[in-house]
Length: 67
Image (tube, rainbow, N blue to C red; front, side, top):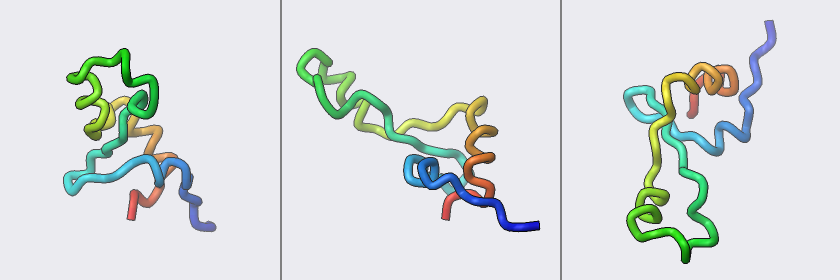
C-alpha cells in the first residue's frame, strides 16, 4: 500500500505539543484592530488548543503527525 500524503495546508497551520495536543493561531488578529479592546487583542495573539472534536479531522489530514 502506498504512503498516505500529508495535507500541507494543515501541517503549516498547526503545531503539536509534547503531550500530543495541537495548537493553532487564532483568527482575527491581522487588521481592523481599532475596534477590538486590548484584552481581546492580547488573547488573539496567543495560540489556542484544538478541541477534542476537531482532532479526528486533523488526524486524517496529518496521518503521520507533525514532524
